Image 1: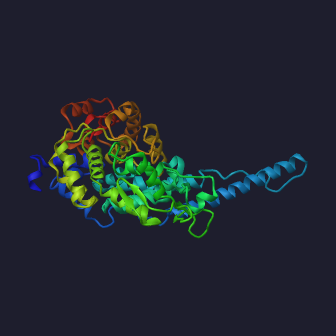
Image 2 (image 1 turned 90 degrees about the vertical axis):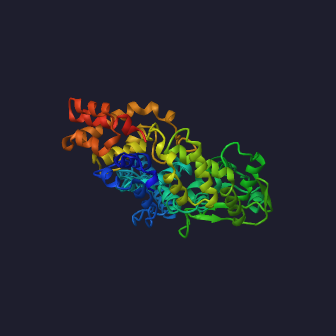
Image 3 (image 1 turned 120 degrees about the horizontal axis):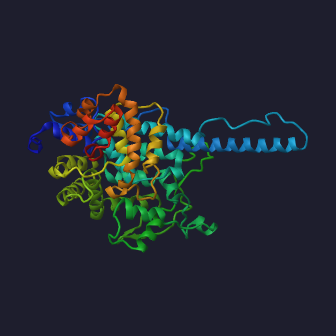
Length: 469
């Protein structure tokens, strides 16, 4: 470990917190200076490091059933209101005719807000935040959209991503692709094999969305040798991967393999023929995709790009690729390889933090925090990275060009942070807390010369050193 240390332990610590975590808070830079890499590596060995234990959060099945009941009740209220209006039109009065919908967000939004608060609280409370950054990376890699699965988006991250962040990629892949949120988001829940029992009885047919995105985005990557026939055959393999109707009080909203919807017979995908029937056929294809060398290259490149540089150092990508293959997709070993690679630390700090990371870093540095998660959500919306609402199945972009145009909006939000933090903040002390040795002489001078405390704090949050990893 000592061979990787720089001559300036404080600089290492500040870099560790900004590049691999969610930024410093309090005396974090001083605390990590003794062994910054060791502190990050220690997070990987903490039991349940990525899990959220909150008994008030609903699992995906509970959420689906609760929302179904909520919507049924709302329909009943609307029906009663229409009936009351008709009676009033005919000159008759009806009890409750003027009943209004209760104020506040409906149940789907209540569930979403509770999940969002748990999501941000973990980042705000993290020691360094490296494991939580991994959660955010994988949640974006295997993304769903709350625009389509709002009450399930948070449960998806808790149930399919968090338990496997330090496990094996193949396990995460299976958990993700069989999760009700993913099956609904990419329309596989209604996909029916043409020659299945259901296929002969219904007009609905095969849907290739999930199969295509698994190969193109989740595993192999684009232009890696698979064909349209592979996509079609894989789509047939995962027919029957569906969801129990949420109206069912016993298991509604949960994953179900329906053999009546499953395409019978062997299928060939990327040169391999799968004769196993039922659910195991799809699981076998996913396992082979997880172990494909193209998947290792795709994941290694994305991970290095996210943490280090838009054009990541080739040696770093190769080190990650090799780790992925040798460890059979062990994601804890992959994370260790990232932290121990000299190229991961030596790259220039040119990588813009994505909006969500910058917001959390600003809150941690200034101590500005609200019990209401909605201001953070509104800020993310304004900055173009709405929580769990990517514009497409590929997730949010992870290159600087995608976020440069939003820097003007960041200034407006930095001013909001600054006005809340300024009464208790000493800008000169804050710059040491937030940046330490990363702060340039120009940034220190600009903060010192600011006419007001809010202006000084805003300048700090908008400095190149704070904006970048």
